[in-house]
Image (cartoon, rainbow, N blue to C red; front, side):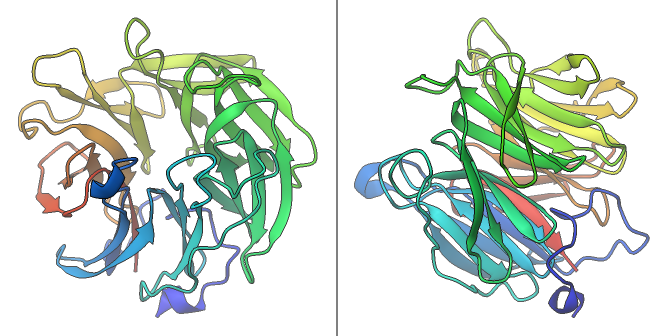
Length: 347
């Protein structure tokens, strides 16, 4: 199979451009589980489906599956654990062709907290996987024996989204240097690939995810303060950043557009808002007529083979799948595990 012969220096995630061959064989769905729920806690799971969305297998990954990427022939899963001092976070590695586990939970010493790492998000480039750490640090590992390569404690806390673009590493920080809780941070750290030093961009408060589009644009979202300051989508510019649209709690990037999701916690029915943003900056509503009740749209993943848009449910178990024009949902998958985090496709 193709996935078994690819080397581990392939692009970071599933390619964002749709290929001429729209067939795909497997989808891997990462569900976070229920975080900090005591004895009733449900751990995170990685669930494998075939192209008809029939479940093939499921694997418990640990406490809170927080990120999943495909790089070369492997899947890398960040398991956050349930706290900065819990010492139960780490990285799991799976075969992208079969879904079988290649490792148990690999734990690393955090360069900042004095505990084991609490990883949040992943990116990959040049034979390394880059990991943002909730302590306010970043590290990289190799893709052969998964040994720690480089790390740096950042002048920030509660680091979140990470991407590699233009031979630089970008990390969103939802906390500033001395913060004791997330939400007030307003920086993006910019580092060389060897993580030897840090520059910072000052932006809006509470940045979450950061990704590069096929046209080279770097997009990020920020969650605001959850009350008077709305979440929004932004892009980095040569002079700083600019806002594109509001109500963006999560987003994914396709071949020619950014797809966004947000939950209106102030509305009676906790309405989900979905939008489509072209790379030219044109914003439109995405599916205005057939959204499921109490959808709680949380995560957004785009199928690179056919352009389908996958919206994961917060608190619930559902994965709703739409065509790129908003038709649907064509499928609603009941995963059986709360908080659908991400979907990665393989052929």
